[in-house]
Amino acid sequence: MDKCDYCGSRIFFGGVRQDGRRFCNNKCYQEGYLLPMSNEVPADVVQQQIDTVHQGNCPKCRGRGPVDVHTSYKVYSLIYITRWGSMPQISCQSCGRNKQLLMAGFCLLFGWWGIPSGLILTPVQITRNLMGVFSPPDPRRPSALLEKLIRLHVARQVLANSQAKRPLA
Image (cartoon, rainbow, N blue to C red; front, side, top):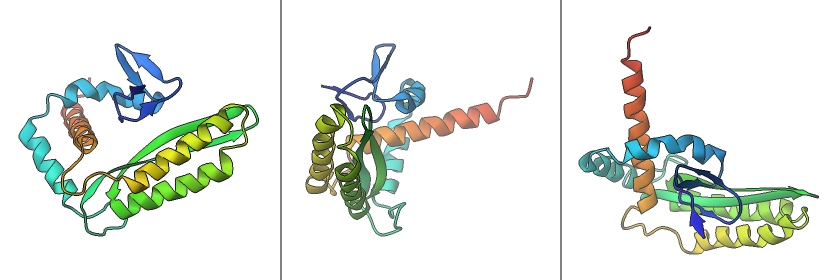
């Protein structure tokens, strides 16, 4: 089973392929242009940012960390239309767990109503949310996904700064 090169989510069906990379959806594909640039960010800059985020306050509730990436999954369907996806968020464990439980409930209510995909994907997405609730990232150390997202964030900032400094034509 493939993983999205941008967000790291598992890709069960579909996805977008481009230049030897695979993305779970168009949003991740659109952000994927930053991947090569993110690998050029110096390790010390990344580590400083990781330490600041991981040991900082939660951006959702402003409570104490540690903070990491918690991914929730959703599915909703109606007759022959089924939509599903993953939503990584940087937050404390409590906020991550709450979002995963909320999305499990959302899937339970709105996922079943599509044939056949809703019937297949709903238990998968509920299980993924519950797995996230019961096996969150290790609070003692930042996850690889947190490092990746911070690398991408720094690359986005560098790109924005370089574009802002360009003279107008």
